[in-house]
Image (tube, rainbow, N blue to C red):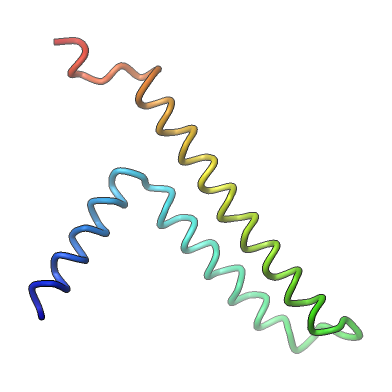
Length: 88
């Protein structure tokens, strides 16, 4: 069982090195959700459903933004910043 946990961790680290915006998106998502959950106490007259919708939209927007930046970064790395393999 310990072996599978190590393999999963190394797989995650490998994927994070390939696309560094995945952990950024995950951290931003968790940060926004945590902040909005803490802010829930002082929401005033706002209905719970409206507060939760705003939290979901903000978290999804951050994740979509991180994915977009990650795709643009990958395209730049693959097409514009010539890899050293092409130079050989």
